[in-house]
Image (cartoon, rainbow, N blue to C red; front, side):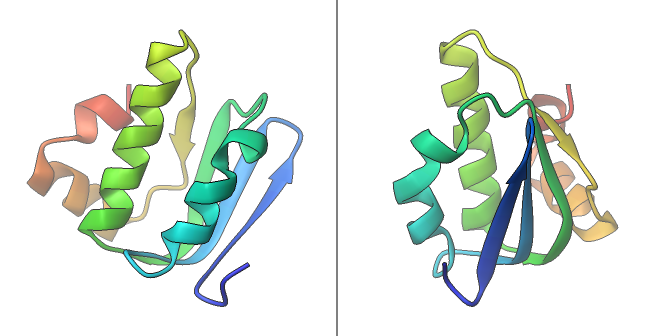
Length: 96
């Protein structure tokens, strides 16, 4: 895994830590299909930074889940990530 972004999977939770940005998400994106099997919750509490590309990835994941009639909950949202979601108008989509 990239030194910028790491993740762990525990039961039905996928937890991210580090930095979720344009440079760090590529490795995860390539492995997402296998990693997201049976995931119902994504924990972002250990992310230290999320940029607009990282936010776009979360929105895209949500869309992929919805197209498969699946759902995941986003937990551990920091004040900064919450503000970013509000600025881009995607909070209702991600926090339903």
